[in-house]
Amino acid sequence: MNERKFKIFTDSTSNMVKEDREKYGVDYLHMLFIVDGEEHLADLDWGEISAHDYYELMRKGKRITTSLIKTDECEQKFTEAYEAGYDVLYIACSSKLSASVKTAQLVADELKAKYPDRKAVCIDSLASNYAESLMTMTAAKLADEGCSVEEVGAKIEAEKLKYCDYGTVETLEYLKRAGRIKASKAFFGNLFGVKPIILGDAIGNNYAYKKVKGRKASLDELVNVAVEKAENKENSTLYIDHADSLADAEYVKAEVEKRAKFANIQLGYIGPIVGAAIGPGAVIISFYGEEVTIVGEE
Image (cartoon, rainbow, N blue to C red; front, side, top):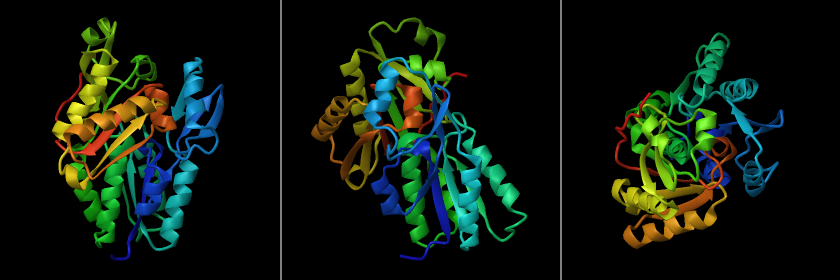
């Protein structure tokens, strides 16, 4: 293993658990969530509020909004990396969902005068959730192989549409309210008893591209997607994240295991930023696989 030449960051939308952050030696930039006008750090370790209590707030009607990465924290962490002699790679939430990548690039541009020899590569992942984390893990592996920050950035850019998120929700209401969903008017017109299947599309939007009848059918469709679209299953991990709906996530895991052999299947909570937009009851699968080519309606 080579000594890394740069520090790697993701952000609160990645949902990357502490074990994975420590294993791959990466850090993350905090976003914020706001409840009753009070700002809170979007902590992926749920240090301030438990995931269950967070989603209970939503079930009880609390409106939770979110904001992008904190400029001061970004500047601090980039500066610390530069001072220690490292370059920076930041794999950011999709620019269709957050202005975080733009903020980080502005910070990097401002620091350039003081640190002319240091480099920052800020990547618009066009993704969120564990698809964003998977890119970050790949970046870490490439860094350990001795690749430069530019080389890693180029490789991630070339393959980022193969890092996939597919999900389903109890209701589209949260996504509609947050402005985080693209779907046709016809789709919204008749949702009685219907559950949407959502993907991160080829330009970084959440797109409701398919609808099925009933909750079980929506979970079964996620199983179908994992089995049919994930590549190199025997050497890769399937991530199943849920918004306080563990039984549904476990159902998806069990059904996938009947039909495919992944090296590992990891269950976890959807983090506070993605959760605020997608709502309690959501289930998302993330994997490396068939390149996404679908572009949702604008």
